[in-house]
Amino acid sequence: MITFEILCARFTTLQPDDLRRWITEGYVRPAATESDLQFQEIDVERVRLILELRDEMQVNEEALPLVLSLLDQLYALRRRMKRLGMALDEEDGG
Image (tube, rainbow, N blue to C red):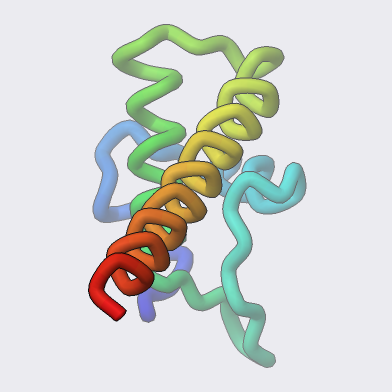
């Protein structure tokens, strides 16, 4: 797990105010401790994704919630399809 400051330092284009806003909006969900926020690797990758969408793909802030929601749905569907495939493989083998 890493801290807010380390996460901001990891990405040159990440501004602390942007990260605070993304946390407030629920795009990134760090664990809160008494003294700081702690980010897991999944949070780091989520920040990387948001930066890529914003900086490289030019997705504006207004569209970001929709794009993230659609990507979350896509990833969830992929996980379900993988589980279904594994269940079918087990059924064929058993």
